[in-house]
Length: 331
Image 1 (cartoon, rainbow, N blue to C red):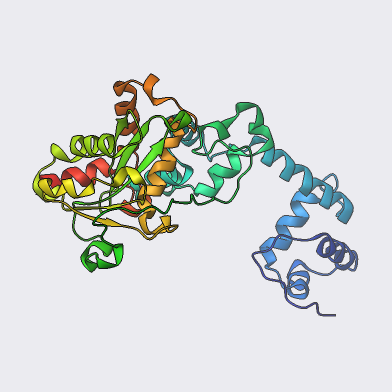
Image 2 (cartoon, rainbow, N blue to C red):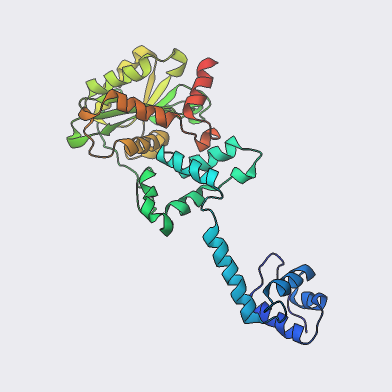
């Protein structure tokens, strides 16, 4: 009697254990049983030795029960994230606002030769949302602070008329390739009651994020914030910015005095400024919708900006935006 071969990497099943018991009762050798089941001789020998009743009789139901008991015990004793060092590192970085992907990537980057430190970001998500972690409320450390994982929703832009508006389609292809530093993407974050907010800028090569407070969502306030953001930078780091279509961008041509060109994304096409949109989501982690920015100190703003720029990014091979930006600054 021959049974079709079973892949050797699979664990023994209940059916196989029944066959082992039947063949063993007929005095078949371990080698013959292994050939019939398509298994290695060592697998059969190990199974009979470990799961025999009182070390003498092999009974399939008892063998299956022993296997499941060992599996359950091993699962209960298993560290949720490989070991205590990784467990502590993950918790520390989650509390610092890092995403699971950033944490996993940085672990691999910090320990390129030691795979014991490597971990998949999906493992971190499963740990966060595992029932045993429920009381820890770890999901509150994630950017969106959701009890359940959901798909992201895009944010709509408003169609307005902006004088001397230059379309993103007239922008140099060099900017699209992200090979030259100094090209930014800009937008506004609106605070409580649309009375105040932030102006944000995202550098396309380094992923550096900068933002300044707006006392009002107006063209004058936005221009003032842009001058604060770009004014202190050397000329090579302020070449252009691609903006949203909000009415507060109406005085964009004044940035020419800083040597900057300005472009505008298509209406309702926030994906054309994807880096800036993503940056705004991260900023919302610190300053949720409904925040009254008149009550937020500049020190708090700069603390948030510093943390965002000192987190590793996947697209930067898990370097931080500040590290990459500084490299270009020193060239």
